[in-house]
Every structure is written in C-alpha cells, then in structure tokens.
Length: 456
Image: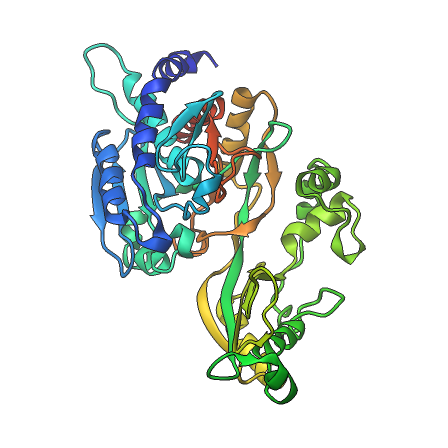
C-alpha cells in the first residue's frame, strides 16, 4: 500500500544498522540453563528500549529478571509484545561452523545462538518501531500510532518458572488490548503461518536407586534388583502399545478439536512426505498415513515422550556391571483443558498403583495449554496484513505442537495472542548453527509496522 512506501524504504535502507544491533545482542551470552550472562543481557535489552524512548525497567523475580517497557502512543489502544532474552545452551560447540556467541553473516543469513530464538524477534520489532517513529512531517517529533508495551523474560527456555507469578503481581501494568507472541515464521512453501495456541507441558525426571554402588553383574544380576530394569519396567507402564497414556483420568479434560479446527487443518498443505524426507522416517504411529487426520493428531493429542535415558556403562567395549542408579527425562505435552499439576499428581498415583513406589519424580517445569479464537478481529488483522508482505496468504494453524507460557496472557490478562515472526524451517533453533535469513528479518519488520499502525 502507498501509505507504507516511506516506512518500507526506511527499513530497506537501515537494515544493516538493525542487523548490527542484533549482532551485539547475540554476542552477549544469556544461557538460562547455565545462569550465564543473564543480568548483563537484561540490562542490554533494556538499553535498546530506552534508546527508542521507552521507559524500561529490569524487574527482579525469584529467578532471571524480566524487562518491562512501555511508551504511550496516539490512540488509546495498547499492544503488548512478549519476547525472551534467554537462549538455549550452545553445546555441542564442536558442531558450530563459527563460535555461537560471535555472530557471523554469510550467504544472506546471520548465525549465532539465540539469533532466531528469540533475539532476532526483539530487534526486528524495535526496527519496525524505528520506522514508524521516523515517519513524521518535518519539524515534528515522531510518535507511536498506539501505546506499546514489552515484556521480555529470561526463563522461557527453562519453562518460565516465575513468569505466571510476575504477571499476576503486575496485571495492571501489563494491561493491553492484544498481544504479539515471541515466535512465528514461514513454512517450507514460504507461506507465513499463524499459530493460535500452544500445547501445555509437564516435564519430569524419573529416577530409581537400587544399591549404594554398581555391582559386578556376575553377582548382582543373580540376586540384586537392577535399577535399569526397574526404570524400564516403570516407563513401560506409562503407555501401551496402542500409544494410549495409562495415567488415571489423563484424558478426562481433553477438549476435542471442533469442526472449525478441522476446517483450518484441512486448509493446510500435506506434510507427510515432507516429514518423511526431513526426519528420515518411513511411517507414522497409530497407522496414520497423512491427510487431515495426521495433522490433527500432531497437535490435538496428548503425548508422553521419553526424552532421554541414563544408566550403567555406555562407553566403548564391554563392562559387565549392574547399575545401581537409573534415570529418564519424560515430557507430557498437554492439550486444552489438561493441567500439568493434575498430570504430576496422577503420575505419582499411577507409579504407586503399579508397584513403583521406589521411582522418584522430580518436577522440572510445566505450563498449561491455551488458545485464541481463530476468528478474533485482532487475528484477522495480523493475518490480512501479512499477505502484501509475503505475496501469499498467511495460513492458520489452530495450535502449535510446542509449549510456552501463553496461558496467563490468554486467561489472566484476557488477551488475544497472535504469532508472527522471522523463522523458517532451516533456522536450527536449539541446535548448532542457529540462523535467520535477512530477507525474512526485513519482512517481519515490515509486517510489524503494518500491524501496529492498523491496530491503532
């Protein structure tokens, strides 16, 4: 549209400056799991907001600090942006082509830990704000079309343990009319995708100890309980060969997909062959072959996933030993209206009922699922404003298979939550050589400038 010609020209001519700012942010480590550089990155993030005339605070929690910022605009509408400054651990370091905290620009991409998840989203949205502030008549100061608030946390990669409490304590300051979420992007066809919700999660570690020390298997294998077998049997009890989770009452609160949900899923492209090629699998579970049923199963079904197993000796050659300890990391992905606290309680009941009172449960974090109405006016605004930028319509996914802390935004703050971002299928978030494409960074900034102005 003609009214965005000047804004787009600003973004195109100042892209290098914004990428340089993003590079400085990525160069500051902020690994939540290792408590590395968290305060320093929070302060740096606040300084970026100060530079745009926002009042910005680094606010304490029981864990990593939260950066909160706001700036008034012309209209009485308020748009809230949720982002996070923490990143995943960079290990294994030897698999990075360039050091993870030394951003590297090559082949139209910027590489570095956190560049996509989520620091690129922070700076690209600030870049859009720069363009809006620069769009004013000569002799006048720039003004935002609407009021804007940012909440940028430091624990998203570690289950946002303290975010819900922070939101409840600061509901008045966080009051807004709508929210743009931290992630988004295009699919394998270069079509932007709107994710209208996130599954919940209950993440636990199960552990068992059967002896004070490992034992020679010639002795222990005959007369002592084996920690690895105890854990395997316990894990085997969680889910049957039919893939149905066996915790008591696990499916009681599951809300099935609606007719509208299935309509939206039917409008999405076929993914079965893409998945087979991308992940090297030959088939899917439950006899699924593709089509709408596969796509519905992918996001509307609760899961129980063994994420890792540890016990005994796994080095080169042989070591005939009976392990004294064994542990496993397990995640349960949840759908509306399941509750992670219920899952934790029912898991303990199940293990006790199955005779595994000796298996210990360590709760590592959880979040409740939440969704936004696909036909909400704000969702329509975000979807419709994307078409001009990307050249194809934004498609709607009723929910993401992943998890995040959107529940308090939807249910406590009462906000419609829309996703939009700069991600793409080979962005390698959480993996070595994480990267963004500069063309998508620019497109996201253009999209956000339109969303802010149209929302106002």
